[in-house]
Length: 130
Image (cartoon, rainbow, N blue to C red):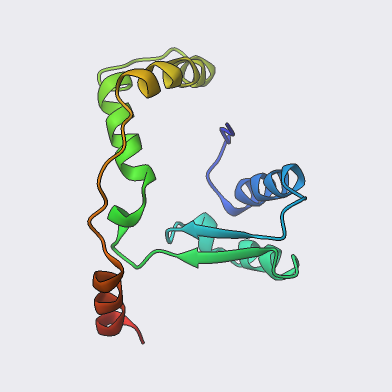
C-alpha cells in the first residue's frame, strides 16, 4: 500500500513507475481512473506517452464516480474505522488504516451485485459520446 505525502502528478507517476517495476512481466495494463488532476496532468500524460503503450489509461465518465468500485469500499471502511477518529500524527493514521484493513475484510467486505449491464453502458455511451 502506498501512502503519498501529496496527491499530485509527481507522486502519482512515482507510484506508476513502482507498479510497473513490480509487474514488468506483464505486457501492459488497462488503468481505469477518474478525472483527478493527478490523472489528467500534462506530466502524467507525458509519462504514459513515453511508455510505449504499456499503460492503457481509460477514464470513467465525468460525474460517474459511482462507477469507481473503490468508492463503496472507502465509504464502508470510513464508516467502521474512521468515523469520529482522531490521530496524533499522519503516521499514526497510516498505522490505524493498515491495522484495520484485515479486520474490515473479515467482518464487512462482501460481494455485491452489479446492476450496470453492457446494454445500459452502450445506451449511455450512445447518448453521451462525442
